[in-house]
Length: 611
Image (tube, rainbow, N blue to C red; front, side):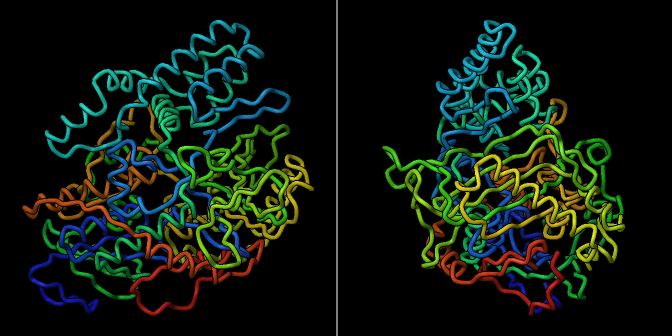
């Protein structure tokens, strides 16, 4: 292969894989390809890494609206645990939650989904006894649900993608024929359908509004089973710690990352992709190209729909996508809120979080922001044990848990689903909704007075809501207030409509196999949430694994996967982050997340104006 204009000369011994996008799928693809002897280069359009999986600093607090728990955190299920260790996530510390989530309707008893199934069963029956018109009927529905969850507890989670007959047989043995039958059966039932089986209006509302109503209930029951199993811990340091781990692992394998590299064209000769070119005129030649960015950007904007089969067209024309999110983060000093419990046997080194997801709270009356009626908020508080409060000493992580009534620092995160078009409507610039155009590069909406005013109003509302909920005295001093909208997330990810997880699973599409190869271009692949039904960190890693297996099979290479330890590199990254702060400029956002990662990149141009 001749030299590339980017300056790197691939050797005859190594073929090159160019990966577009440094989100979780892109980083994991880089790790697996480098692990298998490829010259791996990741091109990232922004000046930060992780895609949706990243956090940003404000006055020593981490704002994190991405990560709530990570399935496979305790290496169980074994399949997921292996994937996490492959990319270095076995080096993180995890905090197990006492609750998965709770749902509250004003004036009604809360519905708490405890991590322990025995406790969950007893609680749901108690709520049914207070609120159901036919408690005995609800007891039977609860017993059925808990019975299915208990069956799933000992099984490997069914999101593994076997790439050979042997792997398929091992998967079926690990999950079990009865569990496969149960999962398939209950995947035909939506959350809304299951909710209607209860006569308790409170439990019905909880099942109807915690997850999208069209979501297969089997996936929710599997989540409850994994919570009981203790394999859904929160990674200390949150989303940024996850991204830092993958970056450290990739660098240890001699991978290279080019920041500020927006791909503007796919180089095609005949039916083969020969590389990609970037907006600044560079060309990266490649033997294989993996697209880890927005699927519509590749298939519609760059390839002009020339390489789409009927299945892809149907998916993009009819499937539902997750909305974006609004995320308000409040940093508290001298707070006395209880966010975690001290360590208990057998895990003496880690505390327990109160909740994985936090509390969903129905709002009455429902406020309106950016033209949207907000019917519920997700509220979640985390303390110093989470790693989201970087200590002044610069040492990281810290597993301190403040005792009852002892002042400490904490964050409260308030989130809700929100359409990007609603916020874009405040700017008078509708080009962004379709992805592209000069305004998407210049972020002219950041200078819109209406946009900034609505962000400030949302921040004040969430702060006042939390003061009423927790009490001003318990919250202590407010040191930081940050507001991120779907436009913020679009700025970093360029995801279509700022979608947080891609396609919404339904009983009709959840098992759909989206081809990783772009039709008609056998060496152009896609990885990430746009070739999976439902996103998430473990599925993105598994998708990367399957793509690199396909590449190795094409090149007649034996695929290998090696587990890695990134604890040393990760600690140095986090310690550096704890010593370098970015000032809060609420209501404007910072120009980029502040946790630095060691990378190779071209000179950074003038920073993009703050959102």
